[in-house]
Image (cartoon, rainbow, N blue to C red):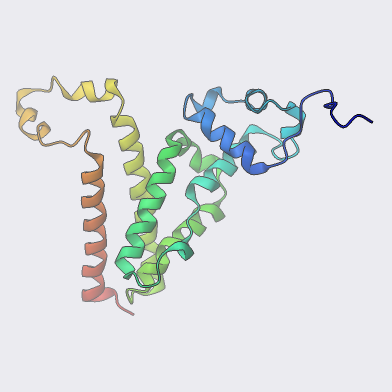
Length: 212
């Protein structure tokens, strides 16, 4: 057999990661509702049936993307960092990952199993418990921080759109004094201040009544 002759037909996908990476690439250009497995197969130049070996439906693909977005790895943090620094880095990591696919946020309540959310909360709770806060309080703080991050990412993604920003231009006179101080573009400063307030607040509560 001539080894230089290529087989007829499209190749099969050999990597689940390649499919997810291609989905992320497509979703950064179009809406989640417009994505289909057939479209993804065409983008990868593979047969549609080869994708079904990894994902039987679009819902399964969305679930896998959500798991990827929410996955946190505290093991990558430097051991000599303080609890506060480790928590801040985890929150930064989560925000950055969510912002790669902000369109997934609306799917989290229906597409992701409970264990995915709980695993993310558990990862956020670890540095909080290292602040000498009992597990019950640490988990509740972590839950609030997860919701805070998802909410901020949703605001950050939507306020970057020109049509949203335009709504803040012609406000009534009595609101213009407040509106001039709004940060609609400098999301980084808002984020740093939000994280600092929350971590400071956790430490404050720990110092008063929530220590084990």
